[in-house]
Image 1 (cartoon, rainbow, N blue to C red):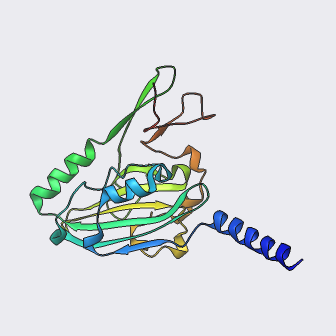
Image 2 (spheres, rainbow, N blue to C red; image 1 turned 45 degrees about the horizontal axis):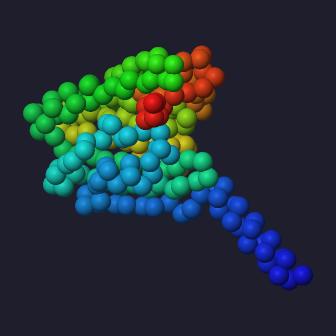
Length: 206
């Protein structure tokens, strides 16, 4: 009887852990910035390839880097935040890189659709290049502080504004986080059937 009760407790604990996810992995400091690490570890759960984040960056330019990600049963939630300095030439180069972000989505019937990064001057405190604006409860964007000579890249999933540590990086209108996520903008997905199904940027089409 005691063994059955113990087994039930263990099973229930495992189920709860799978539903709420494991403890978040936190990484802080310039030495931990490695874009490929997050793509390799969290893979498709990100619904992104973190395209607004630079592939490589000198540690001396990084003002702030922090991430907190937890893997749940179906998705990864949390955030990645990178703030880095840019001189005038570097800022121009980074904006040119961001402007060129696009993904061509292809379905099994051979149909294609190309999504391009969204430039938005009003939704955030600074002008933003946006690759995901809430689709599937995920946000990804780069904030351009031209006067301050810096860029802040943010990836965030399942944002709860009241509990988000870096509120100055959130949307000006916090009620926007309550909107229907499958109607939101993203460069990483496209629906060829009016929203009944979605094809992702990295879906393998033979």
